[in-house]
View 1 (cartoon, one colour):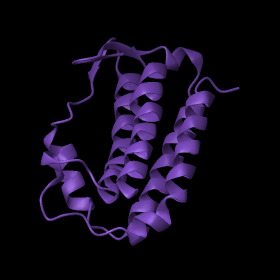
View 2 (cartoon, helix red, strand yellow):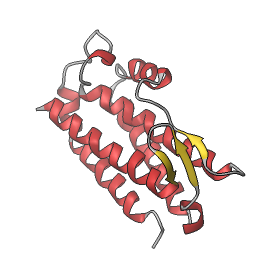
View 3 (tube, one colour):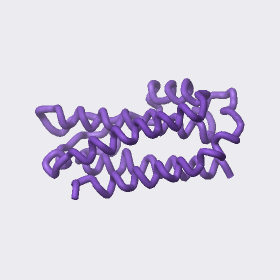
Length: 159
């Protein structure tokens, strides 16, 4: 079994849960005019963020894998301007595009995570607030935990 198989399965389950919410997302009102920085995110904003965060964290994993010295500085704060501006921009995209991006990015992440061996998964990065983390920990917390949190957030916003 691949080293990151449990994390990959959690990502797949979360994606399936997001797909089951699609009809509710499509029927939900568009995102409010005010920017999502000052309030709870609505479903489309959460989905736009998931679409943005999947390739972001995969890129951070690739940065750690490519580095010659460990631990490699990685990550960002929730106030990261690019993160926020991407959600601001993409929250008004058609739901079909948001779900296309979800499938595309998640499959890319899954494919890459399944390629990693134990040695690669043990490589270390250094996050500003979380400290040293292995790639396995990053896949667990920054990808699997993160997407599960946004699944819960989306479900709650659609109730």
